[in-house]
Length: 320
Length: 293
Image (cartoon, rainbow over all chains, first blue to last red; front, side, top):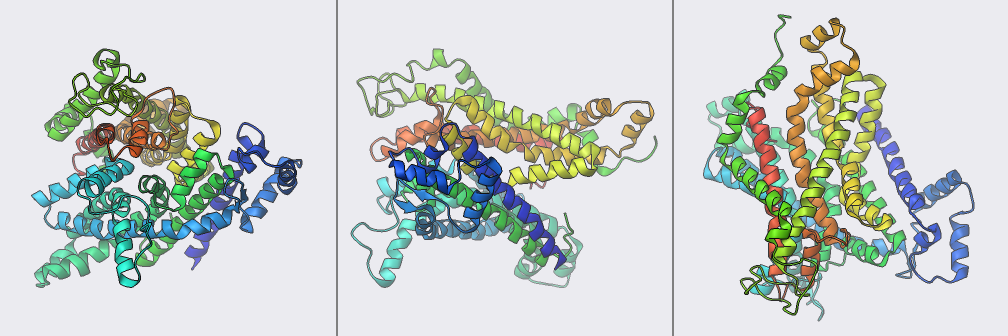
């Protein structure tokens, strides 16, 4: 319990720093802060005045910071003039698509990565092991957005099997289970492209962790008692190798979210990453800053949850 | 000083000498990676002579497929030669990768060295700062900083470096703080060596091995990050880069696959080479840690 409380206390200053960094970036940007808050758009003078008052731009800098903190805490992330919507509404509207893509990618990466890592560790030094290590090095080096383009080239353009853009048919999705299947066809390629890097990472960590556990005495003991290979690998080895694997998955949650920006752009997936791309090209500053804030906060929270989970799985972990 | 060395110091001690080079050369993949990196550096250096065309100037022959006369990798939507663009793009990628890694490693060595050597509150403060930087989503932050402050080669290098040093800092800190307690450091201190000389002459040379390994991995990560920025249209507009080529290719995937294939292959192979080299260096420097993590 103390551990959880301490981690929470530790996360609060981190979150505070993240918000302050956001504020500093806005404040340090060259040009008129009003332009940054409103965007590069011909805004009516009345609106500019309103923004100035709302953000207290005539006040000293620490008062501005406090106001900004207050706005963030109450979920007020500003107004996107380009989209004529509050930023929070805009982001919430895109959240489901991004979560669907990132969580599917994470699930794919975890399942395949753990399976490949286990196989490689079990048959260490075999061609299977070399294959898995090859996949791991490639996955870690290939730019995921280019992998996305390659998948589109092969599966959408040359073979014509899967759609390349969007997350639903423009003619309207079919009802029921057929609609679900249709949706999966749109999800498959972007999720694969996004997952590959993390699949490689997870396979690598799983292999290393399994190799370490498999050389332990209790594995030898289990084998000598006549435990079946499946039982040795899963109930004995994997359970003890789980902690580093779960840690690497948790620590990368936020990075997958960030990485989806590129993948969503390649596949025209209507999520937050695509919104970020559009906001950057339209210089829609409030939306950009809100997305940065959201991703940073997600990373801090995901790390916090991972630390707590790690401690719960493996009580041997001391305070770092 | 007859106290037995601890295993870690022994591992570091064995990392020097001819055994290291022999082990590195025995790895066929490492030699392949090194060869490819050499090739890319050569092409980048000799770009004006090997490109054959001006990468920025288009012609009448737009969208020529590969193996067309005069354009063996084809041309893009504006008739620019894809081979010339790829060769000139290598300059940007290598420059960003190498300079960024140099900056990141320098910051990391200073921060990690100070934290590990002095310990106490210096350590606490510096490690909290590096933890904060490690939490930041590098790609999104780099995107937004460049979008806010405008693009440019040096800005890109600066932003990536500022976001890349914490890993080196943590590594250097761990090595320095364990080396600090070694008998040879005590001996030098008893001999009257000051803090600065101790840190620079006695401790840091022993941390060189892991620093070289992270440096190589930093180059790979920086090249990938720069490509992502270029793909988002935030590269330096005055230079052709592999990322910006892929940005352009995105609209023409259906008709000009070669606009995507070649720059992407260039990124993937270059980054792979630096990653493989980093791994091989790690194996050669620590022969006993064959299990990679």
